[in-house]
Image 1 (cartoon, rainbow, N blue to C red):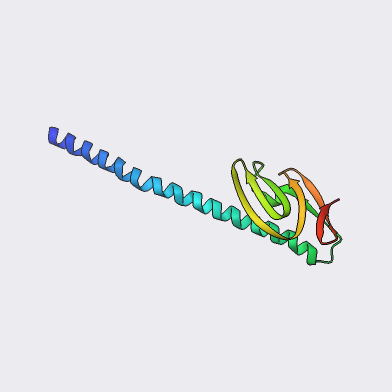
Image 2: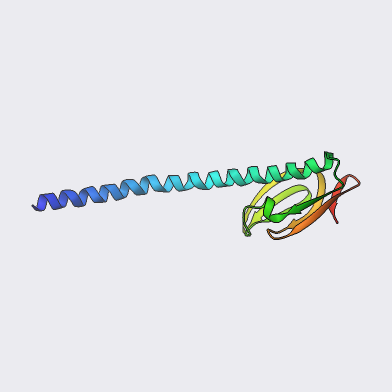
Length: 121
């Protein structure tokens, strides 16, 4: 009877070790996927802003909730660089035309063309 108990305890310990070995690397895979998705999102946001330049629209209303995944994020444009910032994580995209603006999740801005760049109205 004692052999049966020891074998079951050994089996549980081996199972816990196996789960720990598998779970830790999988956590890294999910973090990497999230980072890749946010990098793609900021590039798509930059493309949407760049498309405004080549359109025939006079102005473009941008809502932070349309471009950002959650209220924890802020979109910052500094020249030709578009950054999505969340705490210490920064994801970058590039803009064809320079822009200086900071956009939160609940903010709205209106973009207009200004010379070779864009500005807010």
